[in-house]
Length: 581
Ligand SMILES: Cc1cc2nc3c(=O)[nH]c(=O)nc-3n(C[C@H](O)[C@H](O)[C@H](O)COP(=O)(O)OP(=O)(O)OC[C@H]3O[C@@H](n4cnc5c(N)ncnc54)[C@H](O)[C@@H]3O)c2cc1C
Figure 1 (cartoon, helix red, strand yellow):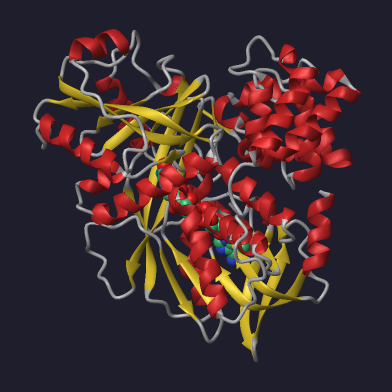
Figure 2: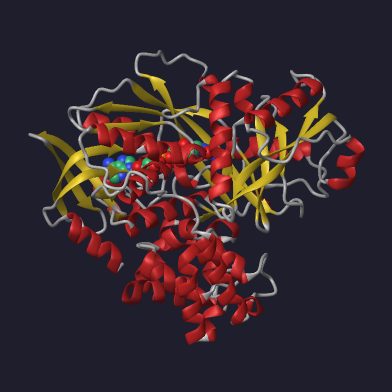
């Protein structure tokens, strides 16, 4: 909390920023890391928590988008494959290559051999950086992945892409933290409420949504990285842009691991769209959907759940089909897709390009980012640095590499120290990987500080919240360095505890209150109560804010509407603490 408070004081001390970034999703986070690393005086404000919107609801894939080949978006696929390779190379412990095993059923619109040829073209688009595609026979699939129902299948193919070993929100957070290490002044739960250009400066109204405090900050340039809310922000700033957003809802269901093999199972759903069963530690994440919506806060519906369950059950041979009781948690978000502002509303939005677009007003120092993918994030950061430069901002360190894991010498030092203190002996029997591997991936150079906590007190290496892998020392580190303002920030975004554990398990964990005390001090009980108030369990499943409550089986009510009404009501009541996801 102290880090956030001191950053808010700095944002309010009257200083003029070179660039103020509005929105702390992946796009805002990479802009902050790129600009701050290159020597620009940057501020970053996020109205909820960092990665509290679209960037915590992705499929966690870092991929070239093989499915966009069907819409002949070859340029995008080529660019995304190169971006994917770049991330695998620079984040070897976080962004990892993974095999995708795709099953094709009878009467599919493409012949298997065409698809097989397509995977080779895809591989070539990626410069052959990943393992070569494979064409396993159905009997091989029966042997290797007996969970797949091969009865309706006529073929399979396997190729490589990559995924985020931890989760999207953690990936975003690490860019925010990197930005702060380079001097960026960032704060979560601070909303930009108004924009006015006076002379050469933007005057931006800010509001601390935790305390209600309001003030104005001055900046030479502004970056609108508000994702699905970018159009709203442009309207507030009276900016007319070449692009705007069309929104598409996607949901995921998290269930117990359906196969022990670490590979993505890919299928075509009944509408012919690719959907996946993606490994998530001891769980599997199934999705996604692609439904047009006008609502940036769209919520999960009964139909969404049924659609995913029906499709996955039709393609797997499980002893017992998956049902609602198997769902541990849900994810639901909207993709902001960039379209020309002049384009009509009736375009087939499934065919819309997933490429990002950046509009700018050079004279007024205003930039808007539309669309995009996590996969393309480094390019977004680089493009924004170039644009800010053309707006007259001095880029003092143009050659500084602002992304990537630390150099080998730092890594070697960490693992050497870890070996000397026999760190991996502390690994819990239930853990999915050695403690040293996990700490390095999550904290990189700052994992060395965690070793110090454990040297001081070996209890720091104990798992604090039962059923998870998070040790006491990590919670201490999070309290100091990770700007955790609400309990959800820790349970859902800095960690993925609430994604992979049932709500009741979390609530009953004896260590949770101790975690709250470490994170929030005398506010511990308040934050604990707030979390369980804001995350009611519906049908045994915790609601991910934004995902909305899971409707009762066969319910006819529309939770999207309920969620919208609730949000509107909260706005009127001024309940800012529950508003801003
Ligand atoms: C279901 C789904 C699956 C996806 N899967 C993948 C995938 O596998 N791989 C991939 O590469 N991409 C994927 N994507 C796309 C990717 O997640 C998005 O493109 C990306 O997260 C968008 O990031 P963003 O920063 O633009 O938006 P966001 O993450 O939404 O960030 C915008 C932020 O701005 C904040 N904000 C808005 N207004 C204000 C204000 N006035 N003041 C302060 N803050 C404000 C919001 O609170 C929000 O946090 C997926 C998307 C979805 C929905």
